[in-house]
Length: 593
Image (cartoon, rainbow, N blue to C red):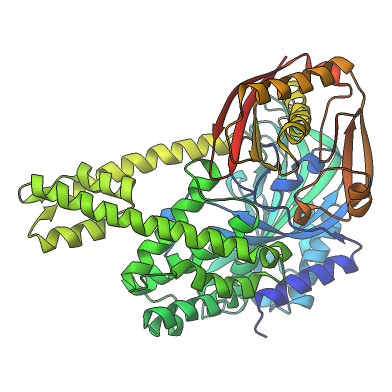
């Protein structure tokens, strides 16, 4: 049977509902109050507070499909495997069932629901080391449900151990693999697991230990299950396809690119190796990702998430030029993206007009930038004799979005050479710096629930209320980033705040702190929360039950928490800086204490 992404998504939901799981909606791609990541990059990412012990309002058996964005390898997109946006199927046990049930159900879903041939399946389990024992229990459970012993491999911690970071929850995992080779799968998975034709399709993580600062593991009182199955990748694998670009997730998008460019081979063979095919995959991935980002409130800018969005839109436009698509690229390619994703994510359909407006505006602006870049190239070329240095070529790339191929092409028209080696050296240095920043951004872990961050999180709610009082009800949170040292709060507003307005906000928050009002928590439905007057602007992220935090008469808002118990614990509040971070969005940085 050939599966579509909709087929797999539905089978996933139906299966876990039959096992008494609540299907929760995907969180948006923007993390809440998490300074360590630009986007949600895995299925477990939005659920970390609950995996750390906070009760989930929907219960302790959950399943979902999570929108994920990974951007470290943007420049690799265009090959047959990399995506910036993908969907991750997951199921979760929060202190409920554990290894036995999860392994039984994993086998049932793969073999009985998806009807995958057992002779093409294999699994790996943790082989044990000086820190934790060999996971014989999981291996035995796999054998009990029907997995041949020869298809169970014991692998080291590098392959079958999950950890949040250097400290905190951790434990072994078991991974499931599917054989993609044309000949029969090798009998022994222990001997063949490194063969690239074995493709991982599912990972079950068993969070059963806590690791302290000295490296000592102690059993967790409440053990959790965290799983992940990549939707597009799994559909490709089980359908016998070589690439996600051959799945229905991309069929209509690539057909549209083929029609617009006059290159039918794009749709006929999506993974062929040619410049035309490479460009088509870049366009398909980047416009699809842009639609998702815009639907979740990201707008093009020169900082953080907005910079990523601007970068991928512009990269798509550059590759569109290569294919001869010289206008309205993004809005035309967005149409099949809407058709494919709107049924799963309602906010994409609801925000269609906004998405198209932003794409059109950014494309118009960038095409003008390209024209400016061509003028700059002309100036540079007139000053140079015979050859353009690599650093100048990189300047055109960084400032005007000129890929090296465009610079080489323009230079050839003037009988000039380009120091391509020098360009690549400058580019690699820039890439290394970018990766270093990204790694630093992703290194911190998600469970910073220190007193400092909890206080700052509470302060954002008070500041939000103050901004709406002084500026108007159009003010809505657009993003938040909290470290142990300061809060950063982005909100919708066109104009720079006056000193008097900033003082009002400071005074409002400090008066709330001085009142030492109690911070109370209630769980209720979204409709009840709205009726009670609670603020909430990310409805596509909410489940049937939400948490509402009330801070005296000062603030009432839907939020996952955590917060202080009394406002006096904040001490004091001080705004340090305000700035613009995109069209119609302002940013305030502040401290407490």
